[in-house]
Image (cartoon, rainbow, N blue to C red; front, top):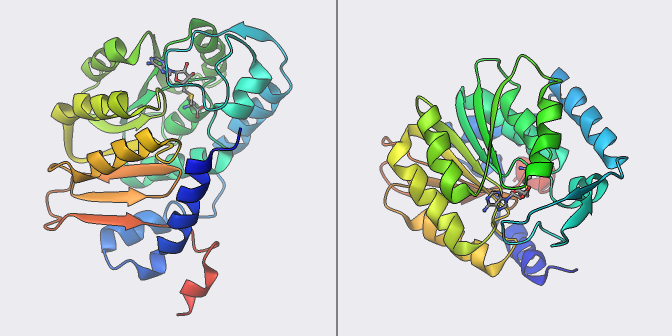
Length: 272
Ligand SMILES: C[S@@+](CC[C@H](N)C(=O)[O-])C[C@H]1O[C@@H](n2cnc3c(N)ncnc32)[C@H](O)[C@@H]1O
């Protein structure tokens, strides 16, 4: 099904977005240089993408309990692993940006809302074996599949919690010493997204980052993103179209909002 909101939002985003060549903040410039502008491939990427390729061939049917606002393309209860990986899982480029972002930030205590088959969980947990990831999923059949993949990465500290985010997010927060990064990629609707943001707020520190996936997936998600950006604790927002990130650094005196696209897609900004 064509998502008109997402398409129109992308056109607007494309025309408004700048590249890192137009960014003056040293903090943001370095972050972009080490994430969306960084072409390095790490060994972990090949292992994770090998797992994705296996899933793409897997026609096993799972009974999926859908606790969220749709799984991006389909609400069916019986779904093949192949269809889940094709419709509900973030693509390699996005997982790899998350990996590099965590590495750049040195983030160690991470929560993921929406494990699905565990592909992004692996990107979130493999840059260092000191990372502690707590990943949350509502569908038991899907989580079982993800857990079997996590066993292939025995050096990683990944803990899975099954249940509705409303119950499992407070449990996950309680299991970490602090909350460095929370990646919210499930239940893509306005009110729950704002609720998860508010649940995280009492536990963030100056260098925490909250990442919202699919901020242009629906009008409600875009409204949630706009509301989150305006919150008084947010000092900087970064809109990459596929993710929105909010930062809380106290040394940023004036709130700033950026829409940034990789310089590959606006290459002339390298020169003018
Ligand atoms: C978009 S997928 C996550 C994709 C995953 N982060 C990745 O990129 O590999 C969202 C997942 O969140 C789960 N989910 C949605 N709403 C939920 C809720 N309210 N509580 C628990 N799980 C939920 C769905 O079952 C689904 O597997």
